[in-house]
Amino acid sequence: MRGFVELAILSVLAPVLSFGQTSSLTQGVELFRQGKYEDALKYFKASERSQLPNAVIENLLGITETKLGNIDDANMHYKSAIRIAPSMAAPYKDLGFNDLNAKQYKAAEYELKTALALAPSDPFVHYYLAMLYLATSREQQATEQLGPAMSLVENDPVTAIQMIKACIQMNLIDESTSLIGSLEKRSEISSAEEYQLATLMTAKHLYPEAVKRFQRIVEMQPQAWENQYNLAIALLNARQNTQAMQLLQHLVIVRPKDANVFSLLGTAREAAGLLPQALEAYRTAVQLDPRNQDRYLDYSRLLLDMNRYDEASKLIQEGEKLTPDAYGLQLRLGVVQMLEGNYTAAQGSFQRSIDWHPEIVIGHIALAQAYMKQGNDAQAAQVLKDSQRLFPNDFMVEYFSGLVSSRLGQNKEALAAMERAVQLAPNVVECHFELGKLLLRVNRIPEAQAQFESAIALDPEMARSYYELSRVYARLGEKTKAKQMAERSEKLMQTQRQAAIKSQMARLGGFHFKQ
Image (cartoon, rainbow, N blue to C red):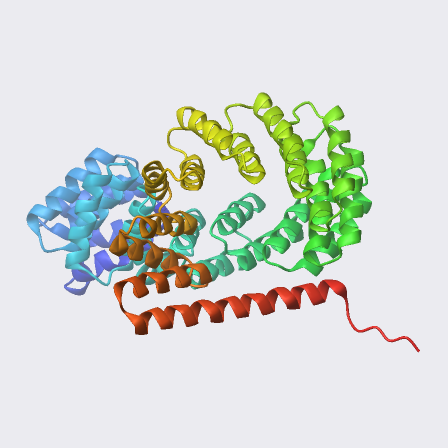
């Protein structure tokens, strides 16, 4: 950062030198430019003694003392310059610079903002302010300084990296890309910094940009298989499935005993629609890492998607014998049993998952759902009542409590639970929808209308919300609006039905002709 002071000094000298230079001042400037700061200081002091109080000379003394590390003396000269010429921007800027280095951010901000008001086009003021805002985690204000300070920022790799991160946080992709390109031309971004940028981009869902960073890392360290693995993940995030699959097919040759690589290959193949090949990769991951329940969960999930329930059940039961924590497998087995209509067996599986981890809410919810599917709403209500004590602020517990109370005809309890669900999860569409239905049932029409409108705002394609809203308008006597909502509901249902049929036809395959 201090290397830029030499550039700034030229603008400081201009006013003095244009009106006639003294020998001491000229010699001092030349020595300063040569980096002989002790000698330069002597000449600047001599020039100070030979003239009336001069703000420019005081500021030069401050800059020189700063270069020598004499910060207190430097700041004294800057303050003297300010007293002599309060409308001169340079001493405020340079004093702010020292305050910034000392992490006295409040004082630095005051000095730099004063300098900015006096010299709004000075790139150094914007540059120092940018560094200040970056140091105090004010990304938006930092990026606002980037335009006028760009040439300085891009020549300061440390600040540039921080600014790139701020731009990413603020979704200023063009600005971050420009800075990255400038640094990469000079090979001033390390692989570790590229990794930091890539992970930040991934967190912001900037997947194509993250791919470029991981590709750069692979170019910098082509022998490191971990970099290729990370690139494959980035490619999958960016939905570049074919490229990811090609990379992973190479990696499984390099890492034939690595279950993670085979698992990721399965994900890539699945994303590309190659389901049998995906199963093969998941199977290999299970064989390589038989004590890891995640391998069984990946494999069994795809089996369920392919309606191969028996295989999924056998796989999960094999995994239970080998994995030290079978919580997830018990949950998955319960799901399979629910799909097969074996609700009693599912209840047993879900209860065993609760026994493994009673502190995790999902097992309790699953057990209640199994009772609801079986038609045993009273038992489901008891499970959820117990869950409300264990998990007093969980929206899923409240949501399902509302559903089962509604099925039991307990409108008051159902409303209270569903209202808590909406409060806990205001962005979950189903909570608003079910609350709307309950309100409509008890004839609280305007409130029901508000809930259905909230559901539509969250999911404009939810046909059921339009249908229920048409019922609301019918109850209000607004026939035209009721008709419009009903037509909208029907249109959405037809569209979704056609999409489902199209998907089913795709699964069945193309034309068949027998001669």
